[in-house]
Length: 463
Image (cartoon, rainbow, N blue to C red; front, side, top):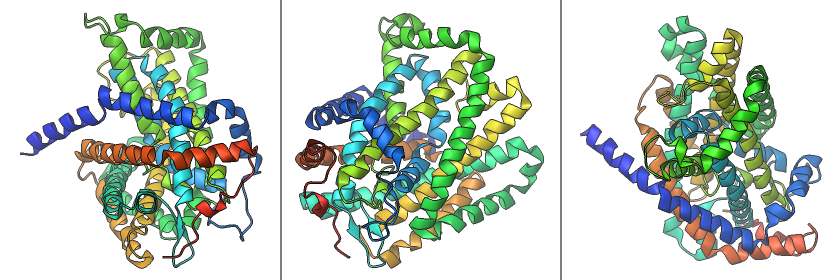
């Protein structure tokens, strides 16, 4: 019975993340790009500079919001820069070949404007709760923008299921890597899972401000640490850097890489897996990985939306280092296990590097879990009271423990189904509200970054 169900889930995933769906994603990205007058292209360097200049990092406590713009971005990054940047990239290369990396870059480019547009709606329709915190997400912009209350509630339920399931998966990754680094700890699985719960709980029970404080310290450190380790691997194989880059471009458009005898097979596989994993890793359009921008202390929704472009760019940088480390190593990717191939490549060079990537993986997984802890609770608070939504924290910690001891590993594919459903409903809603997105964006950039009466979009209504 379970096997039949998993086969059904796999077929559903084939549709949700299949070629037709990816074409739809691309068309949405093109539409939003044109509607925002190519904002992420014309202003790319200005956006990146602005994100880290401190100009938008408003620490004035009188400003509406709970976190600085950078803190909000790092909380959001904590949800997406995790295992997708390691295992997700390896999976794309194994299934789609080296050319998948180029299509991941293309997906990231499209994802920038989708996430940018999504954040505009999230901040525009956010609201202040009875405890003073700000929340935003699909339930609010569906209800306030389209007047469809129940559709928003359905989306929230799916988002919560994604958060719980993903937390279980990431907790399993955390504990598994602990035992991989120190095999003798495998006899203490239940204790390790409990310790993981405590470490996660200390952060998420402290609420959004504590999560933001931890994220802004943890994300830059672990990302830089991982990039340094990956750079060492790439430098050791420096002679293979240029051939690897050439292979990425040639295999992205050459059927010769397929080895299956069908013209275009290699191209289609590279495109499908590269774009699918590219969107999955960036979290663009998926709501779950973007709502963390809602508490940002900004006056204008676009002021925070620019951080979405930076966020996707940073995730893509980490993904690229993973891909180059794998491709320059010369390892045979076909038939490999995406979950362990990166650690094997690093470990083959030096046991120290193997341990280093194991530590980085633990940090990635942990950051993802605390990000998901915030997302689930904040979204429940958009459809119920803050007090009731807090119950989620404790349900979430139970899920973290179950995942840590290895329970329900088969939920990987089911999580993809829930996430895919959320994404496509969310994208349709974004299209219906696109006029508001375009007006907010074009008014802002038309006034060279100065707000022109758009602050009213950041709702201060208490619920």
